[in-house]
Amino acid sequence: MADEYLPAVQWFKCSYSSQAGGECVEVARPNGAVWVRDSNHRGEGHMNVTPSAWRAFVRGVASGRVGVE
Image: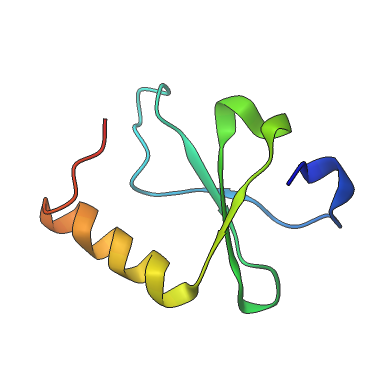
């Protein structure tokens, strides 16, 4: 879904994104939903995930069970 058709939401950089700047993920939480997008390609839209799926993903990354490249 292209973000230019969506109402303005507050996006923030995910704390698990690379501080070197190459792997940047932004997250927004409109009305309790979770939206995720690549900050280097904002115009290409975002994906929607449930709050529980996002929590599970973040826990997996933090524990090392989920690898990110």
